[in-house]
Length: 80
Image (tube, rainbow, N blue to C red; front, side, top):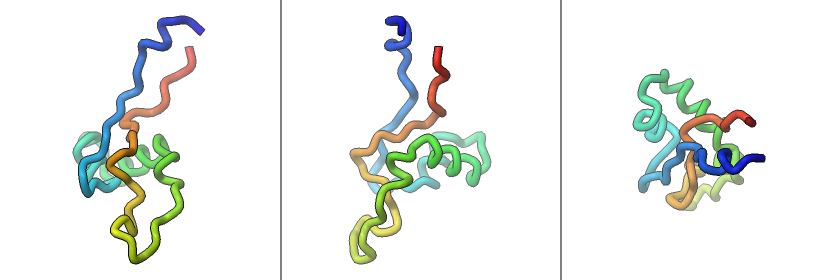
């Protein structure tokens, strides 16, 4: 592994309060159809998408995204 690979950083964001997959998709991937953008975001962010759901009576119910999550807005970088 060369030192050059360490300088390339995958694009990511921290979500805004109340963000959902749809709101992030609309803001960060506006050139894609919303369904495609959401699907891409979810596949690039399995650490969030596959999180256990919050209890129904929780303020987080129905939305796994936390303000502290790192959300990748591009696919994984190809291995060099």
